[in-house]
Image 1 (spheres, rainbow, N blue to C red):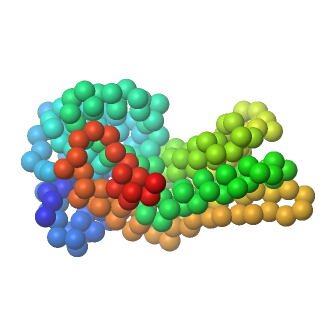
Image 2 (image 1 turned 90 degrees about the vertical axis):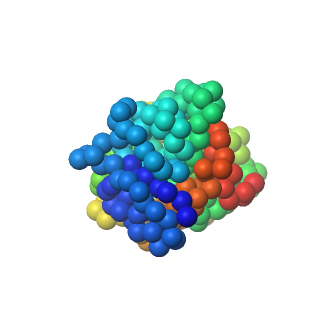
Image 3 (image 1 turned 90 degrees about the horizontal axis):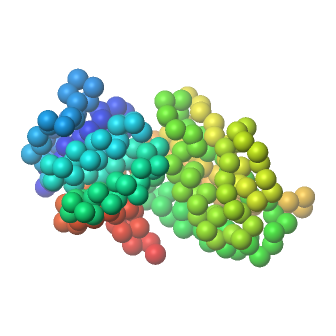
Length: 240
């Protein structure tokens, strides 16, 4: 049994609470707009799970490190501060688990995406593109999952050097266009397409609900208290 603090109690936080309790854990405290997680907050928990907003993620992570609370962060959109935060976590002996997507299926999809990118690198007549669709409440675009997929393509395809959000900036022949759509009640859909004038190949991951994301976050919370440093789903699932 793990004592879990939940930071952010929107739809995802509520789903996480249900899954954690179904797995026999104690959700010992909940922080939200009416009970904020601040610099003066003291928490008697083994681990925290954080799903808030991009602007709140950094202070939440730093405060958790200050009070010695391992933290699982599902918020995306804060990665401009990633190196600074990781350096702080490592220097202070803290524990941070981050992921752009906690779904086990999505993390397998990341590996499939990398394999397809390596294969398509053999024929540069195929142009890559991406579409991602999320609910209208999602703050960041493209999604953190889309950025992870783009980074996987860039790392394994010599003709893809960068990504660009469709409709913003200048698209080049070596840039991966990402079409980010926001549609009511869509948990998350990501599609990668390689196409030319002859044919096209598409791989997709479609989330039917939030259960995959929430279950993965709880699995990370079960794993993190016995580990220090900065970790992600590759460490948990050992997919490499």
